[in-house]
Structure formats: structure tokens, C-alpha cells
Amino acid sequence: MVTISAIKADIGGYPGHHSVHPDLIKVAEKILSAAKKSKVLKDFIVLACGDDLQLIMTHEHGVDNKEVHSLAWKAFTEGTKIAKKLKLYGAGQDLLSDAFSGNVRGMGPGIAEMEIEERKSEPIVVFMADKTESGAWNFPLYKIFADPFNIAGLVVSPNVTKGFKFEVYDLHEKKSVILETPTEMYSLLALIGASERYVVKRVYTKNNVVGAVTSTESLSLIAGKYVGKDDPVMIVRGQHDFPALGEVIEPFAFPFLVKGWMRGSHHGPFMPTSFEHAKPSRFDGPPRVTAAGFQLADGMLVGPVDLFDDPSYNLARQKANEIANYLMQMGPFEPHRLGISEMEYTTIPAILEKLKTRFKKMK
Ligand code: 13P
Ligand code: 13P
Ligand code: MG
Ligand code: MG
Image (cartoon, rainbow, N blue to C red; front, side, top):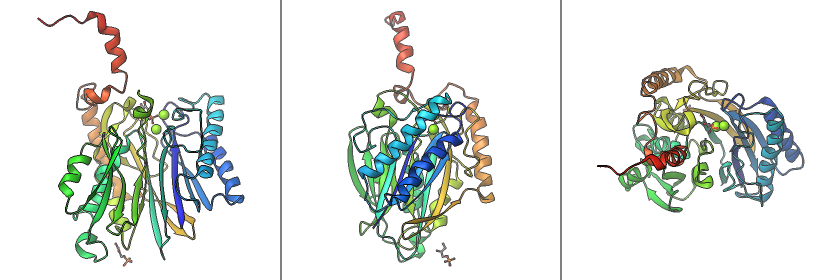
């Protein structure tokens, strides 16, 4: 068995919330490289998406492993020291607690981990996002595993015609439910269409083999206030019993709307870009998504291939820019700005507090 752990955090932006400073990548590489030498990790790669530092690691210790999580925590805390020295913006932003006790869950970083039996050939894609919330993976996961107009395999491949199982988290009630497709497709959509509350955590084959896992950590629900967006990560397995690689990345050819963008308070188009262009500048956006493709070989990460560095995604990027132009003209008006219930986690309560004494009874 091999475990793939993708653990990410924003530990400081450069400049503002734009990107990750190269020194933070260097220090994380140094720490993970020592762990590879001492055989804690099989392999790793450090990447960045916007201002979020991404640790992609393989090992044989299973999910939620203390040694691996401590390593991630060390990379983030050592990086934060440098971020503070460079006075990067929001240094240590996503490290919401300093009482680390062996697991980074609930501490601020986003975590997606899967333990798998490596197949004869094991293609995987690690998706990374900036300026959006964890529910941003709901729409593409539905398309990848359940929409026959996207996953042609549902129609033409006997390996996948049975459909899949979706494990959905209710982030507000802290409950989870498993729904099967195609039989329970409409109930699934009823939930995951509300992506701020219901998020897909994992997708399994009908034989319970995991095919996808997402980070579902919600910074605002952990902190009880706005501290930045979740900027989630997701791992998807491809081919054979799973969607083909091209089916895994096809949903992103449509720049659907996600929540996040400026101050985490606006709807914006999800723009697929190369690693190099995953640097949200305009109005701190638009929200970005990158895709790192790998072949696993005895736990080694063969890759990454920068999957959205492809002219076939040019139209999606152009469309995203058109949508951004259109939405920007609405300024602070909904639905460009998020709905008022979602703004409760941002600065709206402080504004209401300031106006409190000036509100009079309506006549
Ligand atoms: P190849 O014939 O190139 O292996 O492709 C098969 C496939 O599944 C493409 O989606
Ligand atoms: P991040 O969540 O990427 O730090 O962005 C926060 C923000 O306020 C952008 O305007
Ligand atoms: Mg930031
Ligand atoms: Mg970010």
C-alpha cells in the first residue's frame, strides 16, 4: 500500500495574497528532502498555487500519520519564520493554532490523503486551487464521475458503467452521507449544488476503492471568522476503473463560478492555468486552478506534468476573463458579492456592530 498526502497552507503571500515566495518553497524542499533521505517519505514535490504552498508526498504510513503530519507542520512553521522575516503578507495565515499535537486536521491547513494499492499503472492528478472554498470541487467531481456527457466511460467502458459512490460532508452539522450514482444522482445534486455547506470528501467505485479525495477544511468554520479562503486541494486517480485522464480534467474547460476571489467575498470564474500563471492578480483573482499529473511508480512520483499548460484550455481562460469583466461591473452588489449569510463570516458583523446604535425601529 502507498499513501499520497497533499497538504497545503497559506503561510504568507508575496506581494499581498498573490504568490508564494521562492524561499518558502526552498525551506519546505529542504525539510521534505531530509525526510526522504531518512525514509519517512518515499517521494515528494513542493508546488505553489497562488499564495498557497503545496506539499505533495508519498509514503507507507497511511492517512493521518503523526510523522507525516508533523513534517508538514514543520515545513509550514519553518516557512512562517522566513515569511515573517521577509514581512510577507499574512505570514502564518493558515496556521490557526500553535498547539500542534500530531495531526494538522482542524489546525488550518488543507489535507487530502488516500491510501491505495498501486495498480499496474497508476495515473493521478493533484488539483490545486487559490482564492476559493473547498466546495469548489463539487461541480467538477460530479462531472468527472457521474455526467455521461463528460465521462464517456459511463457509456462506452464496461469498467465504469456501474457508476460510483460519493461521500458527502455536511460541514455545518459535521455529518457525512454516502450517495450512489446514477441511482441517487438527483439527491446528490440537491446537496452538492449547495457547495458552501455540502462538500464531496471522497468518491469510491461500487467496490469501495477510493478514486478521489478532497481537502474539506473550512478556515472560517474553524476560526469562526474570515481569515482567508480554504484554497483546497484534490487528488483523483485516472484510467481503468476510474475516469480517463482527459475525462478527469475536462470539467475545467468550462470556467464555472466559485466563491472566493477578492477578500473571499465574491463569486468569480474558476480559471484553469499553468503552474506559471497560477498567480491571481486582477482583483486578487480570478480564482485559479492548476492540475499536476503524475504516474506513480512504486510510490515514486513520476512528474509533475502541468496539465493546464495546454492551448486547448485557452478558450476557458478567455471566457473566464469575459466573465470576470462582466461580474466586476456589479461591484459590491449581489450576486457578484456573496450572499449576506455567507458574509457573516467576513467583515459584515463588524460593520453592523459599528452601526448598531443608529438603527431605529422601522415605521
Ligand atoms: P489509448 O488507446 O491511447 O491507451 O487511450 C485509451 C483511452 O482510454 C483514452 O481515453
Ligand atoms: P487567500 O485566501 O488566498 O489568502 O486570499 C485572501 C484574500 O483576502 C484575497 O483578497
Ligand atoms: Mg493569503
Ligand atoms: Mg490563497
